[in-house]
Length: 220
Image 1 (tube, one colour):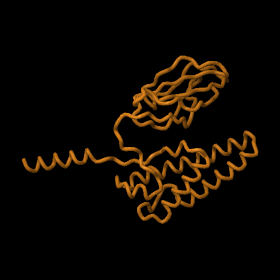
Image 2 (cartoon, one colour; image 1 turned 60 degrees about the vertical axis):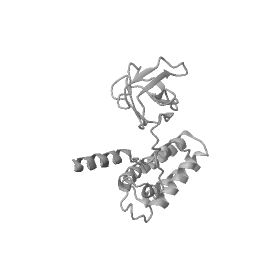
Image 3 (cartoon, one colour; image 1 turned 90 degrees about the horizontal axis):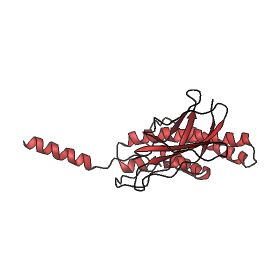
Image 4 (cartoon, rainbow, N blue to C red; image 1 turned 60 degrees about the horizontal axis):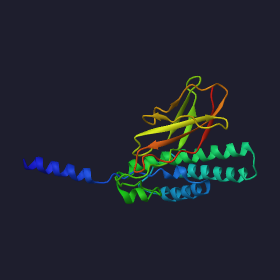
């Protein structure tokens, strides 16, 4: 009986321990701030014995960061090609940071000082209801004719998602509800038409998060 009591008490203590996770809020940083954040990660991982083998090495992060810097400078001269190049460079750096963030979270083994030593930040462990993050759309695919399948970053504590879509400069249509981030599918679209869509997360202290930044895509 004593052994069982001790075991139960240990389990309760484990349940009360906060689970530290790496914050992914850096994906929403402006380009200049993202560049500064990458500097912090490079400094935190460089020579850090707690993180001997990050999936994206420090040298690779330096290269990706410089590529983004160059692309931002070129974009200042204007042009859609320069803007596309900047977006590609930014996405590459963000994806690299995501990979290292996951590695850091696992390697830190729920030790907060070790996690913070990487340069990454810890996500909040507060379980009280809070305002949900704005949805970040990371891609739109055309799985079938007349369909958009939307990929987004996970939103903590979201109970579902609402979406809206429009063509051209028209008004948004009725709100469409989706059960989770894996089921966001817009249907009945006309081939060759460029549509603009937005999403918001449902739940939290206010009932829903803010609408995402609008994203445009052509239906096939």
